[in-house]
Image 1 (cartoon, helix red, strand yellow):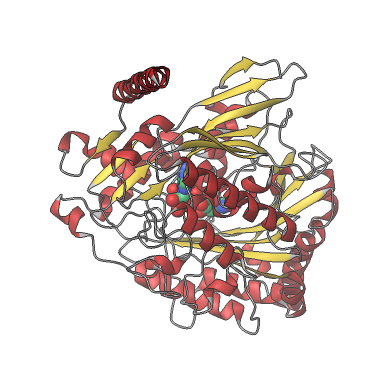
Image 2: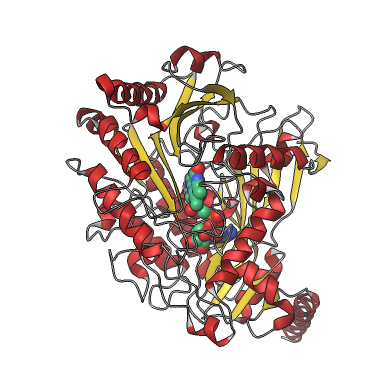
Amino acid sequence: MVRLLAVSLTLAVVSQAFRARHKSKLQTRSKAKILTPGDRSNRKEYVHALSTTNRFCPTRCASEIVQPATAEELAEWLRENQGKPFTVKGGGHSYACQSVVQDGGVLIHTERFNEVRVFRRPDGSAYVRAGAGLTFDQLVPRLAKMNYSMPHGECLTVGLGGWALNLGNHPELKNFDNEWGYNGTGFINKIKMVNYAGSIFTVDKDGLNLIERGQESWLGWHNRALLTKAKGMGIDFFSPDLRASGPVMKVMKLYGASLAIATEFEVELIPKSEPGFFQVTYNVEDILDDKGGRGAKLMKDIVDVVANAGPDKDLDCGIFYASHYFKGTQDGVVALKCTDWVSEKGDTIAKYAPPGYKALEPKKSGFAFWTLNSYGKGWVPMWHAEELANFQEKNGSEKYREFLRHMERGDEQGPNPCDACSSELMYMLEPSVTPHVMFDNFCSGTPVNQDECSAFAFRAKAKFMEGRGKVMYKQNLPSCVADSNWKQHTAEYGSGGWEVGRTLKWTWDSMSKPKTSFWLGLGQRDDLPNGATCEAASLQEVGATCQAHGISREDLAQAEVEKATSKCPSFKSYVDFDDQNNICSSYIYEVAAPPAMTEVSA
Ligand SMILES: Cc1cc2nc3c(=O)[nH]c(=O)nc-3n(C[C@H](O)[C@H](O)[C@H](O)COP(=O)(O)OP(=O)(O)OC[C@H]3O[C@@H](n4cnc5c(N)ncnc54)[C@H](O)[C@@H]3O)c2cc1C
């Protein structure tokens, strides 16, 4: 009895000592940086952290912007603020205002998760550990300096976090999922994340690994881990073509941005430079030329190159249209942009490019701008995908030519009221298994012409889609046009995906009082009913918190221009899109510094 008492006492003392040590460790931890709108000494930093890429999104101000630099700082903030809803922002590149905070709400801004380190193994293979708050321009060109490649989005200023947790891809690089690259294996080895209880954990091919438990029980953590793995295995069974390192990684790739906050990614690198990337430029006036059906034939031939390149293992191509492209005339361009997987000189694309082009030249695979002077401007989201066979059968190439005519000449209601426009037409497979064509359109403007420009883009898109019904959206590329059947039309939510995602959300973030309410489904926002027209479609009133602190739409637009200036200081001196986009992309690669490297044993 006495021995038992002694053991219990010893245990109590040890556990008290452990708790005290744990508490003092937490107390000595550094804290996340907090920015508030009332603090004028931090005004520039606050506005920079708040601003997002699409300036047609509403201007709303956070009462508090939380900027952790480590997973521990983020975990501690979450543990101390249980129950407080928030919005998470990565690169701020979402189309449909997903990282715009509620007025007076809390924004968790991940930009300080920005470390980059390459780990090289004895056999020369390597992986990079990269902060989740990085944008691709801060990562990919730096790796290129060491002759390493990794998957990335088309636009260099897209954020790693929002892209990777959301089926991110590059239409012509296809995440290097071919013989040239990963050949069917997932490229993300590990993600470090913090959940809403403030638990720090990693995700890898085997599942979830707890590093430090937050405000939740052991049982709660393990139940969730088991359930997530079971769902992951189900997803794996029904979607074997979706690439990921393990079933839980697949869950995160699909629904991760609704479940937890990523702080760091470990990505397996390809130990060689990217394959040759080329553009073949045509003057849009040649495409619009109706004499003897010349333009229609050229457009059809260009679309056919894209359709045929899709299943061709040597080539992948898409179409890019941009107004204000050519030097001097400022004529628009229709370009084939292609990855030539087998020829660094572009011999494969040279073989297939229809005659009549102005130039066939190498280009960076990443874009710095999406329309002329795009930073600080907004656009109305217009992305969708549709079945390629149906597109071709319904003479899609001629419909696209008509769409480009609207971009260039305006429509029955008058000239194009936007500042500049671009559009893309590309081949797409994942997450579908049948070939799709994806369409995108950025018609950019400012608050002065937002409503007119949006209405114009809606009309042009409606005309383009006439006679072709079935479309598909992605959860981060939703329909801006009101769509009562949006769940069925969203790639991640159709065929039971909604139910899977919703139960996952329920396990990670209570549905009764969710902390992030938006991401899993447009309809989950209190202020945005299911399937409503998206917020960017019309000019919204500036939020009360911004008004109270004198923060205007122009301040946010200026912050975006400053971001672009910091990446390409002379962008304003380039008066055509060709120079602005291509010189700036090249400049970003040129000035990039190689990241730190550590040699590892395995
Ligand atoms: C010009 C342009 C070009 C694009 N090109 C491509 C392309 O080629 N390929 C492609 O796949 N997509 C592309 N996109 C779409 C883009 O990848 C997605 O919108 C992506 O989600 C943006 O991520 P972000 O971090 O920059 O954006 P944000 O707006 O900051 O975040 C998007 C969403 O992800 C969440 N999120 C961000 N970081 C984290 C994190 N660390 N943890 C948890 N959640 C997080 C946010 O809460 C938000 O809901 C493009 C977008 C634009 C505007």
